[in-house]
Picture (cartoon, rainbow, N blue to C red):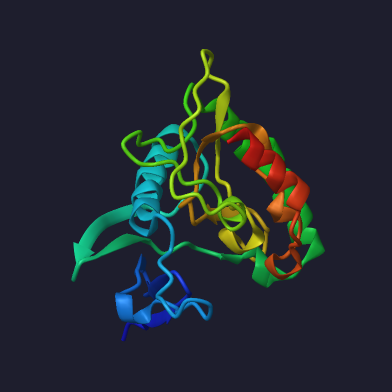
Length: 222
């Protein structure tokens, strides 16, 4: 019998089976409530980020050799958007808790993944789907609550493709070889300047501190 696991975060609900992974918008009654206002807290661009990830998975799979989960479907059910992909193989680098694995992954990223992403260039920041709004990384929107962001342009193709949340929890590896088997969670991906790709892969997710100076620098650019 196929095993099915379900859980949720403050922004998403998740379903994992033996072969598939689905992440979805939360229904209204499952959203967290603000202690300050008593109102439901709606994740910024909840639907648009799933649309962005769907477009990105197809784009990365077709233009690079970077391993990503295979896109299966983007569909609406009961008014909520769902993104379905194949289940990523391997285990997250976060769960490896191995300095050796971290060094191996860092080398793979710097020698293969990041160079491929940086070859993907565009004259406008934002999603590969230019009909979607600009959705900066969460470390930016956590500090700057503006509801809309304008798209910067360049006469040259100065902007490179960034994952924007390339932490150990989003990198899956083979537990024996430490080779990258999948990079997941491309909700915030898009064309930006190279300094948006902060080296989150160097430390476990729980050890990540807040670099306010770096974030302020990115906010000033936007």
